[in-house]
Amino acid sequence: MCSFSEVHNHELMWAHYADQFRGICISYSLSKLLKALPDEVTFVRMFYNEAEPTVYPTHRDLSQVAKMIFSYKNYRWLYEREWRMFAPLGKAYYQDAACLTRVYLGSRIKDTDRNRITSTLKRLKIKTSHMTIDKYSISFERKSRS
Image (cartoon, rainbow, N blue to C red; front, side, top):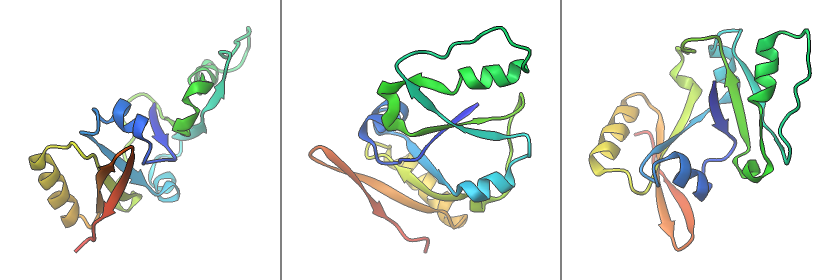
């Protein structure tokens, strides 16, 4: 299971999931990613609700029931606009670097890490954007591939 979001510029997500703005956010082309992943990998849009899902006795496949349970979150997390990727046990590999469209770097990332990531991605022709913070809003400076 892996989580994706439709947004890259939400301050709370950077605080929660990117080590207080010290991390990165990887942007993908969903259509290219779907083509590059194995057929048994699926994506499910999260359901946000006040109540947890109810599970009744069923003859359905237990993996489908588990997928349903893991696709619910409390409505307070709605701002994440999350999708979950489900794959068989193990790693879900893709070979096409064109799936990655951009990498966003947090404002507090160490300079050494920023330089290493930027130079590596430049060789792979993957764009990077660096976060800037102005009062209570964040934005990303777009860098070219050159």
